[in-house]
Length: 176
Image 1: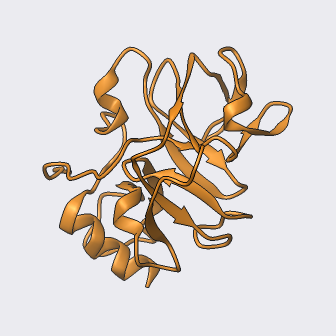
Image 2: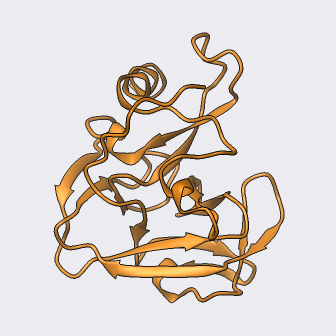
Image 3: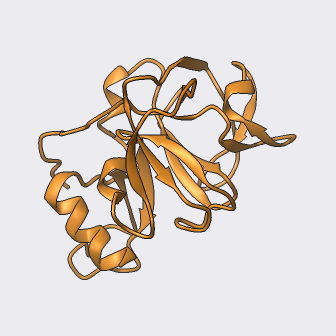
């Protein structure tokens, strides 16, 4: 699947208070450390290799209300964070069961909206040995990059991905 030139407004990552599923239960992303085991999409547990936490001030964030994407509660995502969405056999995507889309493409759907960073909101990016998709806030699936391939923060080598107009057109069909 071809990916258009990226137009990200912000950085990839999730708000530090976002809950992710670990081997010992749900934990705030900001509280994770290398070696912690996270449940990944497709089954199994994978150890976190690096936890990068930075000040999200000045960046664009997507506010995701509770329930908008099967998430149990509201959360914040960096505008460039890749989100895995089931295609539900979209006829325009016959070869993809799921696709990654940048969070910014979700703005305007199901109450999701872009905002300047809320005060003191840490942006957390979790890195693994390989690209992974992790569970957040119960039912939301988020891409996590490979620690040794920085480009996988924005461009997946392992998952189908849409961006720009293609992502917005798909999301309008899928989430409207």
